[in-house]
Amino acid sequence: DQQVKQNSPSLSVQEGRISILNCDYTNSMFDYFLWYKKYPAEGPTFLISISSIKDKNEDGRFTVFLNKSAKHLSLHIVPSQPGDSAVYFCAASATYGQNFVFGPGTRLSVLP
Amino acid sequence: EPEVTQTPSHQVTQMGQEVILRCVPISNHLYFYWYRQILGQKVEFLVSFYNNEISEKSEIFDDQFSVERPDGSNFTLKIRSTKLEDSAMYFCASSEALGQGNTEAFFGQGTRLTVV
Image: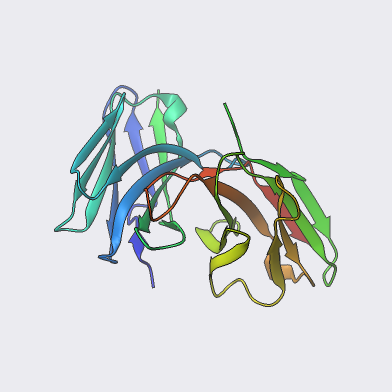
């Protein structure tokens, strides 16, 4: 039962272009969403989050968009840099939940 | 910048042995978690801990697993009798709050557990 889905296992983008990573969820109780970046042999690093009361949150090169009716969120990275190459995890939590549910991840490769 | 620290970074153990994975969460955080990632698979929730007790656990977290906060700083995961399929990266995480105020979890670098 995948509550958080990331249907693209991998994505390749040219340096300087926009990277768009997508995430879908099924549990309507989720009201807080997070993106984590993970390098090999390291723990996930928090990138950006969004509450369900918003539809957009921006932090530097990173913007997260939330479409509640579609149960879909996306992470935009612009411009993409080679150092952005990593696995990106979408995660979700519910107000009265007790954990964060992770998606399977998307491996982003930014080509110089 | 405060961080979650985990020790050891790599643990090799024989099947059937007990292992204890250690974590020092960020000091003002109240919620603590263990996650694991089997090689090539997704990050899976194991257990969350708040106010000195387990607040939620997954199906993975069976009787072989236990958690403890033995003092004011450490948070440990014990696997009583390890199995080959317990081999994974184990991540500890902590957050200021959950539920009352949405906040992110900060993860440690992980402990790679190899059961042979």
